[in-house]
Amino acid sequence: RLYTKGVPSRRPSLSPLADKKVKMSQPEKSAKSGSQKVRLYTKGVPSRRPSLSPLADKKVKMSQPEKSAKSGSQKVRLYTKGVVLGYKRGLRNQHENTSLVRIQGVGARSDTGFYLGKRVAFVYRAHTKKPAVLKRQRSPNKVRVVWGKVVRSHGNNGVVRVQFRKNLPGQAIGAAVRVMLYPSRV
Image (cartoon, rainbow, N blue to C red; front, top):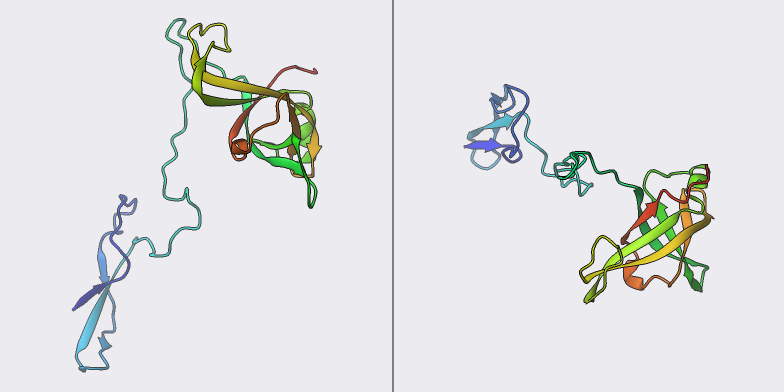
C-alpha cells in the first residue's frame, strides 16, 4: 500500500520539486502481517494543524486609492479608523457617557497626544429614512451619525476616551468609528 502524509496542496507551489514524491530509504514492516509497507512522503504539503490566525489562509488585497469620475483625481480619506472597545468602567460600575476607542496605528500613550480634541464619528444605518446629514446628498437616506470628541488617553496602550453628544448604544461595541483629522492644533 502507498501512504501519503498530509493532504494535497490547494495552492500552487513555488518550488519545482514540491509536488514530487520521495521514497524513504528503509521500508517499514507491519506488525500484524509481516509484509513490508512503503511510505511515500510529499514535500511542500501543508500541515493538518489548523492555523491559529483566522487571516492566515486568506489573501489580503491592498486597496488602491479610488479615482473620482469627474476630475480624475484620487479620493483622500480624511479620517483614521478606530474601534469602540466599550465604556469607561470600574470594577462594578460602567460610565456610558465615555467610550473607549482604539485608534488604528496608535500603540502607546505618547502617540495619543496628536488625537486629543479630534472629532469622532460613529456612522450607522437606521431603519427609517430621514433627510440626509450631508448637504451633497439631498435625498432622504438611512445613514445617521453620532459625533463625539477625544478627551484624553486611557491606559498606556494607545486607547483614548471619547465623549459623544448622545451616549453610544451597546451595539456600537466592536463597531468601527472614524477619527477625523480636524480640528488641527498645529
